[in-house]
Image 1 (spheres, helix red, strand yellow):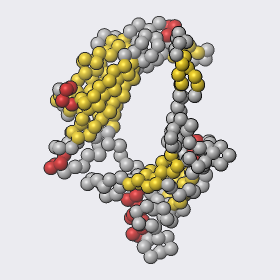
Image 2 (image 1 turned 120 degrees about the horizontal axis):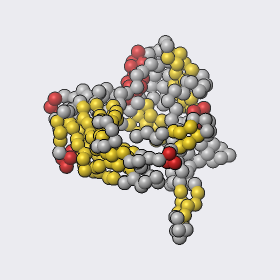
Image 3 (image 1 turned 90 degrees about the horizontal axis):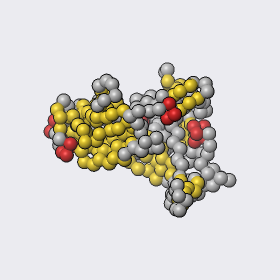
Image 4 (image 1 turned 120 degrees about the vertical axis):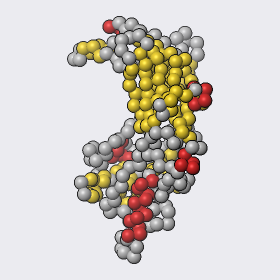
Length: 292
């Protein structure tokens, strides 16, 4: 966090820098003990093993700071199955609904709050979200939340409701099109409710400053039919680009019927002239051309 001033130096403000770190395969970086289950390894983890640091208290700019741990739907379902299979044994699993006394795993710190997902018709179990407050911790007494496996458990991650891909249509630098394709691989809804159900989709599109997007050319395809933008798009916000300064940003929200398996959006654009001085230059790699 640092102080910032405008170009004229007349007004001041605060610049807040935020960093997002995502660990996709924690077993690669060596997060501690693992439980072997067939060909898969389930790593035990802690905040310090994943991110290389502990939590030293809440953010000074926020009223509260929390750490959340989610037991996703398929994982909860497998816990319930394991509980039924091990009833009466010394490996009996807690089936009361919170799984805090479960014999297959344990957490180093008890949660301050438990949030359960609303039951869905297409799901046998609901996901559980544990909330851990860090207000009582400090740099001298940091928090290092940990998750340790005691028994192997295999489950498959829940499939995303949408798969999205973006590609360019046309050739040359004149009136090409940006196409965003959306597919729904997980739909399994009864015919009686599918026609009345909608999925709200938010799209955040960032393009370089030298690409001029024409938002009035927006087209929405539901299935293979062109739909009216006013009937499908609920909200749209456009932040124009500034030459050699900032990229353009387009945010829009539209409704996708659950009975439809695919949808697409297209936007026409023109490419501007980009000089060599606008391209990142490195001694080892040479010129790095920016991409769309």
